[in-house]
Length: 121
Image 1 (cartoon, helix red, strand yellow):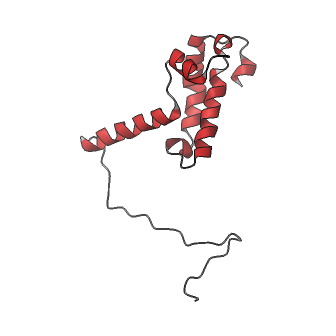
Image 2 (image 1 turned 90 degrees about the horizontal axis):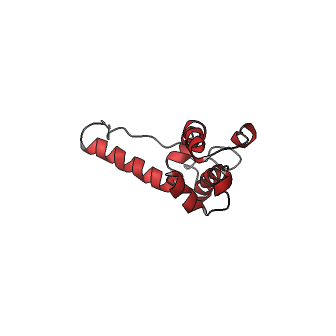
Image 3 (image 1 turned 45 degrees about the vertical axis):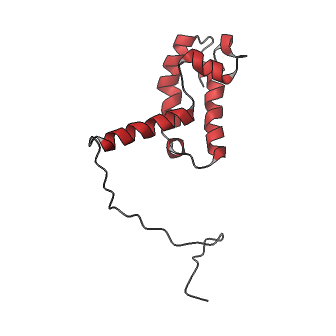
C-alpha cells in the first residue's frame, strides 16, 4: 500500500510511515508477541524486509544493514526487549500478575472435529 501510494520514500519518511502503519499492524496480531513456529517468525520478518526495501537508495543493501541504517531492530530482538521490560515491571511491583489463576485445557479432539472419549479403552 505504501509503495503504491508514495512515489518516493526517503529514510525519514519511511521511519514515520513504518512506525504509524507497518509496526502497529505487525504488533496487533498475537503470534507477533510470541510466535511459536519458525515459519511465523520468518513470515513476519519477511514483511519487515519488504517494507525496508521501499527506500530506493537502500533497496540493494543487505537486510541487517538496512535495519542498522534506519535505527530499527529485528522482531526477535524487539520481543526479547519486551520480555525484559515485562520482567522489570513485575520484579519492581509496577505490574501485578496473579500467578494463582489456572487455565483449563480444552478436551482433545480428533481431526474430524469429534471429541475423543478417553474413558473407552
